[in-house]
Length: 462
Image 1 (spheres, rainbow, N blue to C red):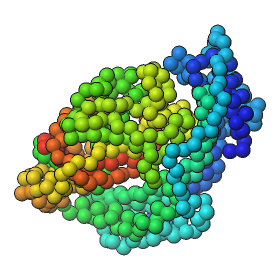
Image 2 (image 1 turned 30 degrees about the vertical axis):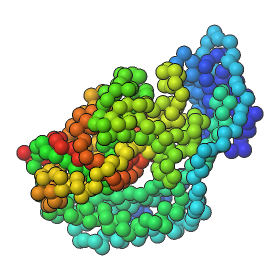
Image 3 (image 1 turned 90 degrees about the horizontal axis):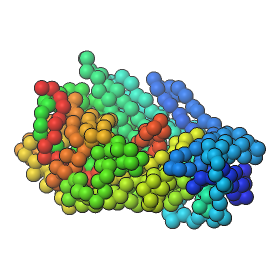
Image 4 (image 1 turned 90 degrees about the vertical axis):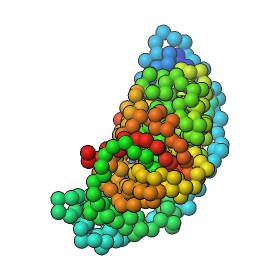
């Protein structure tokens, strides 16, 4: 971080705004990633290095000019700032406020920095997980295990006078298992990760993670395919919050609402879901994968209530979209790297817990589908229509979880499903992922308690 002094940041901001504009920022990144992949019982790849660069942006007339460079020479940085300034023509220079270093409202303590842990110890974890998964059954034909950590130092300064600095540490461990019996092939997938260091393995056994993935893959081989149709569905908290992330989360990002690309455009203050539904995006949760002290525009990470008792109360804003709506940023301006401009993105998004007991939800559902683990999915943010795969599901019969089934999908419409939810559990289970949007991937987590949807289309055999 010594490459960028406060004085240099001020100079770059003044240069960027020398042709005018309403706002400018400078984003510096110094990242040291490590990834290790094991496949076919051998280490296939170990990748590490250092990525360093600066991105400079000007906002003018509700538009953006952005340039970046990995050349840290002062002359190159000034040329980068001049490049964005040339996008604004015929205007007098804009002022830059004196920079003030911001103090974080939250502090994420890393107990065991990944860079201090020998690579051999990380490889040993991978080998243990691989061995545990393969020993589970002779029906397992492939195991892939990957370990990733990432230490990213960022410094951000903007023309409003904000200057912040942050060290972001992420650790991720993934096990993917493929099992086969005859012509049937099934997969099991488990992952742990978060904004933390090697201490994540203090409370998470890689053997247990591997066995869970292996058990799911093997267990789904011998079960029947689900019969499709409309039915009640209970989604377990263990399934994570994929449905919330996709069915409403993206639709509340301000760039999509402003462009009319969201079914929730122009609906702030309106009832869009069951009064039981409260949706929150919270960047301040300790250790979660989407947490941040500051977003990528020097705005403090925040807890934002997006939907309160079924009513939209807030969209997720970055600086640009906030300026368009005449509001303040909600701290959701995020970018994949210095090569990307910030856009509105989720952090840790979840459906708030309710008051129902999980046993009562299941007992109160005479027949239907119980979703224990959700797979991937996709959503049309304009219409709200979605399709999600079910990785692990069971039939509910007479108010009890019964036989397992495979091949299920959930098909529905986000607003319709959120309006239909009639029971929400008191539990809350998180899942993690990397959210893709506009060619950028950022770490996120999502969560949901156990919920009941009394009527939804379940895809399967007809």
